[in-house]
Length: 607
Image 1: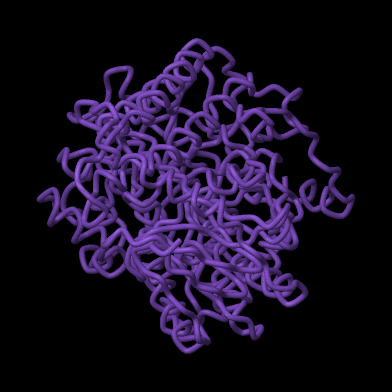
Image 2 (image 1 turned 180 degrees about the horizontal axis):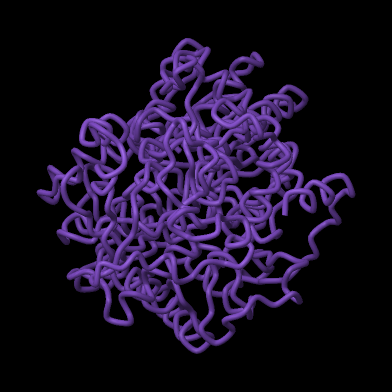
């Protein structure tokens, strides 16, 4: 172990996005020693790409909003597979967390009365998203970092964790390495919080950046934690589709929240053709009257069909493409420029409300969104599934191991509502940090097994073994094949035959990954990093495919061509993924705990 640096903390937080930073601030405020590990540079968290806003029932724009309405919207959007306790806590605590950010220096857009402004978003009954133009996630990270640097948090940047260490049944820390120099590190900790984000890099077309390789899910799974709802992968309906170099980059739902409409190649606003009955019943007599553009002085106007839930909009765009009405590069047209017909000074209004989108399309695609439509299409964006946690404490099945943010699961059920992700980070990041600190205070110092550390070191070094068979293309080729496989066989619309093919193919890719070598040494070796990421990508991909095969219905973000309807027989349980005693992946179903009568009544009152 002479080649290993050892660092000790009371609480170790893996991931420095919104959830990780908020957990670190809370744990440090409780008086414990906190270490924060991030795979990239501090500030480059994927949270900065969450643009539209954070959902919180503050009722600043529509006084009818309340936590009860927010709770009912979240449960309905998740098709009632949500952890109802998490949905309740989230709806109740989100407003306080947003106000807390404001107190820490976040600069939000304002209403004429000076309150934090809120905008419409898909699936929300009222304008609910507190926002900063279309850069809300960036402002969240800036605020949390600026506040966090005064809390005495030790930050370990550009460090990848490859294994959680245990002391008996409880977590004892983590093993990782410096990405720059390849130096190994052991982090001893009494409690660990996973906040590593999602799994988007398992797919070919994704809005996710390179860090999103399912690290937290796999680390927790290997340590004995459970995964839940892994079949539910959200395909955001609007990502860039052209040029190829930027395919998948997110086009915020805020464009539609500010009045953007979707059209096919015939110029038809196709979302009017596929509106759920319960959505129709609450509109005006004619669609065009009922879905007029919402202005600040017209908050009672009905939501446009473009603001239906993300899974629904993504499927509608896919249908237009498959039936020959797509845009030239395989998507649809998103038009915000049309609001010039409705409001004065529309160009300046668009630039003010959507500055990042304006510059993104201007610089990357040569399109002025104030004058012409954007080409957009579905892109892998978010995973509703993840590490199973207790709704109140965020602890996993492994004592001392917590999870928050996208790598955790329960809040969103079968489909996440836009804007719930950012408030999810700060609500449950706080709770995870709070309970991890309390756990650490009550526990004596942990011990780390030298044999376990040596095994982790050996596993990490194996791709550098020059005697291993060299696969043409190496780790990059395996990752490419996996991404193609998941996109084609376990994508937006699925069938049992294709998913079974994918499971068999993943087994073959596991074998290939075992023989991948990364020529060179540990310093500045991106091939080595990719080789180590493969295990995580393959694990989460298998979990998605195996869970999706078991759910023989279409619900939320999980759509089956062979079972196109929702089946009530699948409405009362979740699918749980565990690591079996022989290392095999096991998928079982467990009933959802009964919801208290007062929460059931809230849902009935808001149908």
